Image (cartoon, rainbow, N blue to C red; front, side, top):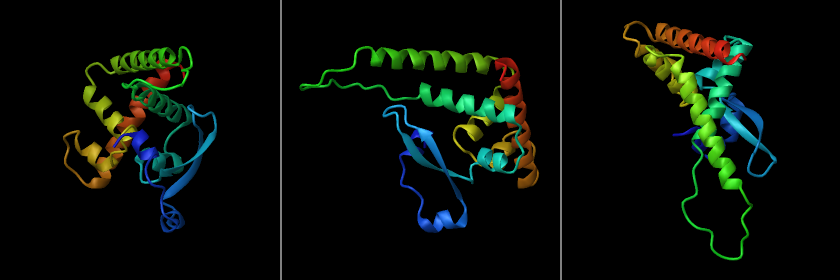
Length: 171
């Protein structure tokens, strides 16, 4: 499930909110220009690490940058024509296409920082983009141990990749 699909999902129930499994956030909806209320699952490893103070500010900035680029690069392109009396805004699809191209180019450049470490980039992407549990992501490094050590391994990889991105992108 992509990040955008999760954002369009059904909001959590009052019982789930009472248990503290979700945090309320307000983000700017780029389509309408209005503030939108969102709920972020604290079961997401990155959100859990942020709340626990296990990520530094520059690491959070690097992760947020990548999430922003993944969101832009993954925006759906309209493939059907608009019929009727609508007058489209001039250049909006061109701006969207340019933003997607720029985001993809920047993501490819960031991925090039990890030539030879594609496995680490994949773990970073799975944890930060798709919200994969850290224990599962850490177990892919090939070492067998407890679930806790797999979680620590995934955290170490995410921190390393985020540090490298922050260094190269001067965040």
